[in-house]
Image (cartoon, rainbow, N blue to C red; front, side, top):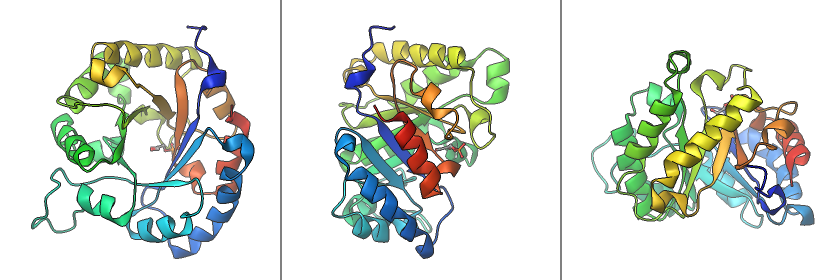
Length: 256
Ligand code: 13P
């Protein structure tokens, strides 16, 4: 494991704002834009995923910066249709966003299945969007020792029929770690990341350019330990990303 050379890693930091944020909150972006323009940041990436209502202003505001904008979900079809309240990958692409989060545990809880997530991924890839594909087990699944089985199912169904993987980031976010302040023990996390890697190895399209991120209660205190884990190439940050100072602190502490 230790042959993995972290110094060559381009770290990826994703801010998932979930259902938070209004126009007034855009002000805080300025400091993050300044940070992203610094030289030592050259190889890394910051991706902001605000709610749909803020996509346009975020895209305009970050136009001349290195910050990339993504959406938090999309409909499973990329054609237009009578789906009140939904947004498809064409619309996301059209407005200028480059990424979309799919398979997030909160969307799974709201009804997304591995099969619908797969349809969403196929649809988003057909629009040339990059995917932030979230996987993770529940506490119950973990307690029953089913983590590996669940992840395998999420990955194999979620990414089935995916031709090229160059646009996919896999974010491991155990549901029990999201918004709870609890993170996996480092040795457990390391083991799970290796398992994800092993699962993906059997899927050549996915494996050739595999990038694995961690998400779930990432904060200023735990982030520097988390990024030391081999093969973790970035962080998906919820609550702490809403506050630009906290987000910047995490980035500064972990940038390689
Ligand atoms: P928290 O960082 O608030 O635990 O959220 C993690 C998450 O769900 C990011 O997608």
